[in-house]
Amino acid sequence: MATGGGGGASNPPPYRPYRHLRTLAAHDQAVSCVKFSNDGTLLASASLDKALIVWSSQTLTLKSRLLGHSAGISDLAWSSDSHYICSASDDLTLRIWDAQSAECVKTLRGHTDLVFCVNFNPQSNLIVSGSFDETVRIWDAKTGRPLHTIAAHSMPVTSVHFNRDGSLIVSGSHDGSCKIWASDTGALLKTVIEGNGPAISFTRFSPNGKYILVATLDDTLKLWNYSTGKSLKIYTGHANKVYCITSAFSVTYGKYIVSGSEDNCVYVWDLQGKNPLQKLEGHSDTVISVSCHPTENKIASAGLDGDKTVRIWVQNT
Image (cartoon, rainbow, N blue to C red; front, side, top):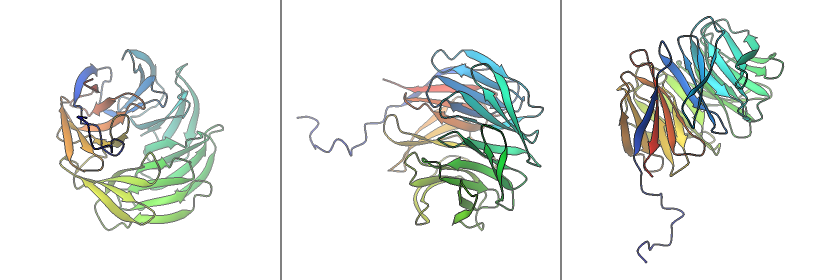
């Protein structure tokens, strides 16, 4: 047999390049964040123009504009059932939106500086946010009530993310530290990275919850085993010294790491081999945010002020 080897499960499929499918231009300023909904039917983009836009991820048409923030939006998160969006804004608030009706259902107040990052837990009964006020806050998603305020870092908090069962929160900061917190009590469980290195611009748990992906402002992405505190893989080649660029895990066909870059490209690496597989060119400014579709081989990317667009990329079949 031509395939031979017999170890098909462990051999990654041959890489299929991504190609540009569509450019979505509807924001007036930098697009700060783009995320597919968990059910894969919708795509949301957030911008410094104070608007969120909900798109159909199938037809790539604009479904609704969510308006209400009085300053730019830095981040957005989808609830697990893809019904709600939570946005984090420079107006010091977070808002919970009904993605279907396009109405704001709650405004979360308490942060004393720009709110920079947000995520729902998998159960979607909790929201975690991080801010330039150096705190991580945990909120009751139903009532909008603050549950815990954690004096987490000594500089702005750049990212917050729940693990797969919602028991842990990882946070990263410009202070160079990366910490793990108990989501039920807000207690510090572990400092994975001490604050003596480069600024941490982004961090998130891997889909299986065993690892954390950490981006630092020295053009580096690392995969860490947070229980042992060891760095396992390093991904380089992209440019990241200034902005908090998000990265993502792609698991729908092979296992890849995907990230934006300050050279206006999207980078795709082989998760295991660490080698860059592709550089997607087309944006005309820094690619600040990327999102991988939950079931299809599709990437969305967002460009800053010199670009203002969302680009959709698909793998050749």
